[in-house]
Image 1 (cartoon, helix red, strand yellow):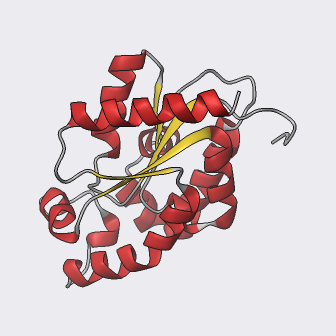
Image 2 (cartoon, rainbow, N blue to C red; image 1 turned 90 degrees about the vertical axis):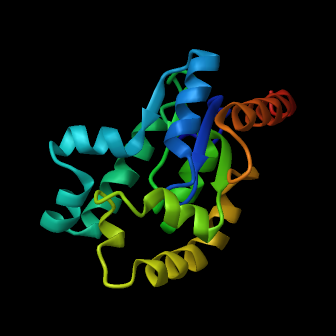
Length: 183
């Protein structure tokens, strides 16, 4: 990453699983016409297996290495503007937080514990929730990740009371202001 290059004008969505990153990413893609990069989908395509299978076969650390490699690739200064939807744990590494901020405007989508549990409770493809006490696991992960999301983000948005269109409108208005001040 060349520090003298201005950051690309991408919008990067971070947040806990179930916070709305993929849904809001699709809405932003629709409105802007920018390509959507769903990091989890890209990693699954490259590995030719699900994230759950990557965790089971290779471990979480191998998956996190794949995330870092992909973030480094996305930081190509010649890359087009994009919407980037990250995995919930991408912020766990200091290197990743720096890469995220270099990509463009980082938006932390947040939802309260009850909303997260409702949105993720029926999904069996969440390897970090394969535990005897998923509520305790989510609470613990959210406590660890909250300051890391805050460190990486330019904007913090609670997704629980807004629909996808309202979220996209707010993010786009904030992003316009951000990019205007950074040209």
